[in-house]
Length: 287
Ligand code: PDD
Image 1: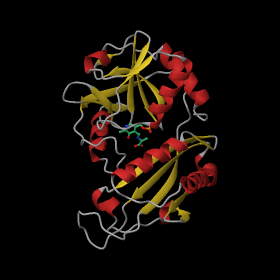
Image 2: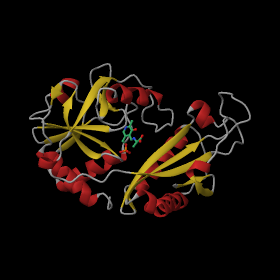
Image 3: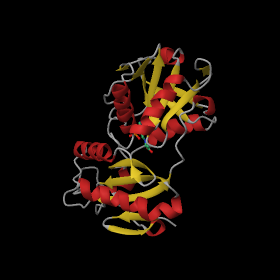
């Protein structure tokens, strides 16, 4: 059994309880983060905390959580659960607006936010060797979520429905495109393509989450002098790409070899992925 954190207390996950009037439960009224760790060391904690703060400010929740306290909670969850979960651990951190005395849409006054965190096992990182990575297959569909996808809201039904659409047919993810036929992101990851040696990813706006892995990958590319650009690209450009990758805290950088019925290039993980992933694996604790 793993240990979780709820409102100031560490306790067995199965014993954690919240009110059914919690607005996170009733409205999906909350913000969350997933912070990865490998061998007890977190990746991008500072950036994850900053994104959470931005999300909380956008929905006017005051968590009262300081960065140092939050880091301590996450680190403690990693340390105390390492025996049960192994050395690769993700921490799910969730702040909802809290439990009101009634179900009423307006933000209530004087309600304490609910702060909940738990640890879960992450799969071991891949090895940066393109000949030994099978690559993954994804579905593709029109993005039908809301217009505030830059907020990491716990209201994820749109993402869940899109993920399920692909998962049902054996896909690792579902890539999404907007009305103009441009790629936004995937249901729980960001999208990169490689064309003629240049790495491209859609620019940040309200159609996609500012992924922390995306940010760290861009930093790695910059440091290594690998050509890259934040720019819109279409579904057809994705099909014609030399490489397609997805990034997220759980996937790190995942090479994609098939999108819908379209095989990407030669259907194998590519050399730029191998290079970027090797750099990322080296720099992920330092950025
Ligand atoms: N998902 N886009 C969406 C819609 C996401 O939900 C996620 C992360 C990302 C990648 O962000 P990051 O690199 O910061 O993990 C992009 C998390 C892992 C989840 O919901 O479990």
